[in-house]
Length: 326
Image 1 (tube, one colour):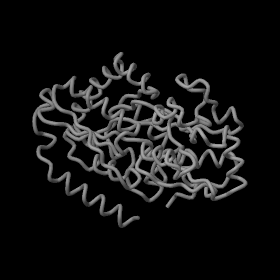
Image 2 (cartoon, helix red, strand yellow):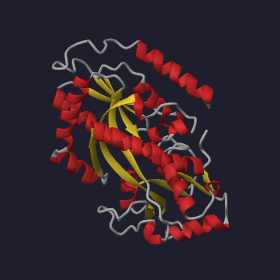
Image 3 (cartoon, helix red, strand yellow):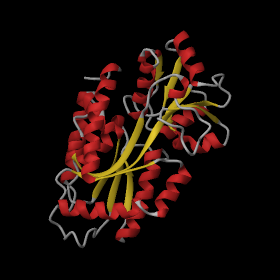
């Protein structure tokens, strides 16, 4: 794994060194003068990809230049985050950073932390959920957990890469329920969308992801939500009970946000923050998030950075308890 990560870092560093322009190319007032890339570390069709594409379209309208989403998947999120962190700090490569930035450095996946980025804003936070097929014999979270206790190693679950947000969310859920993490076989994928395909195809037994990422299949009656890992029930799915309501004291929320490489000029970050604030306050954004079911959670610049520092400390305990620390 360490050799693989070293290769990822070397590739991304070479790529960033070959990019045209630099921090001093063009004034902040004229930014952008060419296409801006938004790196998405996860697969097309998933929640992060959907939200990234909304922001790309909104920023393109605001700035009058193309903002293009580039999916850089692999390495449990390390490939995309590394590509974003090592890009030239000139504002022409932004990254849709995700929860995994709080954990990957503790797992030996990548040395990256939030300190490798200049924070622009947090844009949302979604609770993890446990989903099964509509024809599953498990009607509640308790049913599933009892089956896992009685048949350790029999249940296959997915939702994202090993050690990524939804894997750690289910690991924390099992710990809170007194079930060893290894009692469930985690099948890594590149995001929630391919995991749902695997679930519907009968290749796995359950998925841990956010409800919005599987909203279409839920509303179509193909999937059943056993529990959400939030403090309170979701407004968009009020009939789904929380894990706490079902006797498991556990909350897990995955976050997403926009960031630029470390050392991006402060004036440029401030311009992006001001524009992003307007987008986050717009009716269009609220309507998009309501329609897709994603929860809005906005923190700007320094507040976002402080939140990331708190998350880094919080998930340290879960990573260690799950045995993923290196």
